[in-house]
Image (tube, rainbow, N blue to C red; front, top):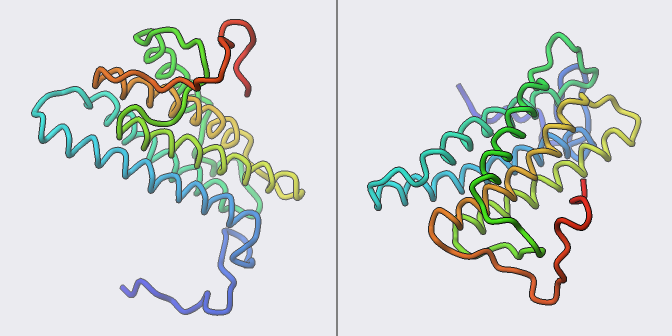
Length: 200
């Protein structure tokens, strides 16, 4: 099987049910979820290599979760690729979002309470997960743009991606904690958490 088809050589591509420009809002939306998936794979690869070097189970939980997320991001891309989404064919479900929430809650329960905004970093895996968080937010913006253009968007995909960025934030803190590394607090920030809800 050839990997190239030549059908997109003039700047168009196929989504399910239509042919569109490669810079169409729908292509931007599922393309950015694909980009996010690549960064998740990078974070997981780092942890897998570190697990092999260390010979312990410190990354087992995060590796399992990231593996699930990679498949679910592919599901998000699949759902977004329908020009006219059909409910019976959508793969992303409310149960996936609820599982993310359970993972977030479990990680947070094991972490010290957060008081200030934190900067990406502390440790390499935490920094990689913060990259995932910011790319996830961009994917969310692309999906919102798609919806704002009047094109149909599966609602559960938007909920899932919104929750996923919260997961990456929490997972980054969990990665620092696993290595005994402190989160990097924003030095000019006040103590804000606990006084107002986190932004959606």
